[in-house]
Image 1: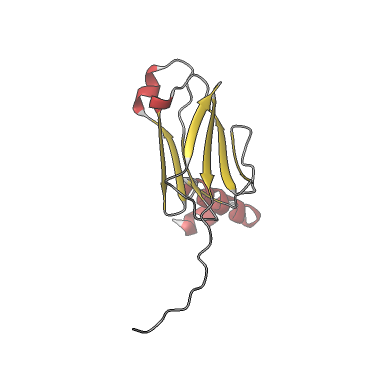
Image 2: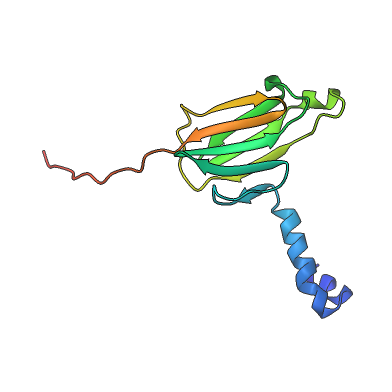
Amino acid sequence: MINSLFATYPTRYSTTTLDSLLNDTLKFVDYCSDEKQYSSQYKLFTEDNNIIFKCSMPGLDQEHLDIVIENKLLKVKTKESVKEIDFAPSFKKSFKLSNDVDCVNSFASLEKGILTITMPKKEQHKTSKIKFK
């Protein structure tokens, strides 16, 4: 397949075509640091030892969203019931976090169409000496 792809396009476009193909294929997870802003619709940043995720979710309520944190991966998606709401956005993204977060103390709020997820960073494990019994 790749040979036919390169045969179809001139050499100067081969890398660009292959890059866009890979980008479309790997689009389901954003690998990033907590300092990077993604788009006008959503962003992820660090503030006061917390990782904050903000996203525009106009017309949605809390029961329309699924939010999961698992192994440094934040997953945010809208439920199937969103299709019944006029002009409500469908959203499904995963974000690789650069720090471990405290899942127990993490929380979300949805006010005036803005979803905010606050995830406190876990304290780094300190080195401790192991004693023999």
